Image (tube, rainbow, N blue to C red):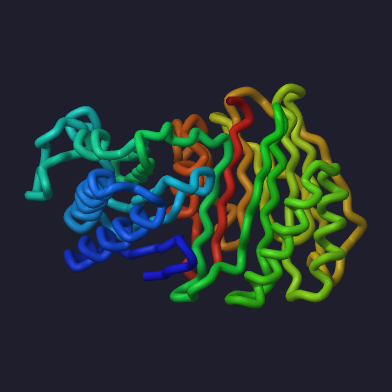
Length: 333
């Protein structure tokens, strides 16, 4: 189990994990203001999802966190490398169970959650995202979303991301703090602070400010992307080995970062413009993910919510030997 502030990663590999994730989710739901009835829904849905991971999955993992865009909401993401769901329609029926789980099926999870999404590939595995809100509040529908996962059993992740939406423009930043643990996390937090103070500047200017601010820290690799949805263009500035991609159903295009370490050494910072095709998505990730993932291996993924995109890529391309972060941004509402 890896716990960081109000975000907890749990490997769900045996029956004892089911009670653990249920307790974590209920505790977080209470702190987010969900009432007893709403917490009961969280308990049932999370238990069912965890039971399915134990009985069907390989390398089952759950992320439980407060929703990044709603204080009074809980987000749960379950992912695995199991057999996938071959008949999603049947699995979504209440009462459907193959091996003695609660028998609620995905239909039960759908009823309990304020919003949910399932992405499954037969023979590859499944990602399920669930959102639970207080007082019948409308679930957020973010146009960007990401996941951070620390190396091994570290309590904090040395990576961080942030994004700001303003009209038809979304500006996003990802920082991979040098090394691991608290010193790396401190560098990434400083990058987030500087980004939030000056996100309305050109991408290369934001990167320059972050570079100067990180001089008293470990430093890190940083990328800044400003997406103009109306103009169909992204302006990108990167320093170090953060990867930036424009992902579409037929493939992906890499965006250029210059060599160096923010806060320490650099080549001349540059900003590049890229045309953004329709039905595409921006993806930024740290080197905790391999660059070798193939869009063709994820049919339909580019049409999914940003959190599900990030979870699928983290599951399949992430390594446990490094902090890992993925941020996905929709190019159209």
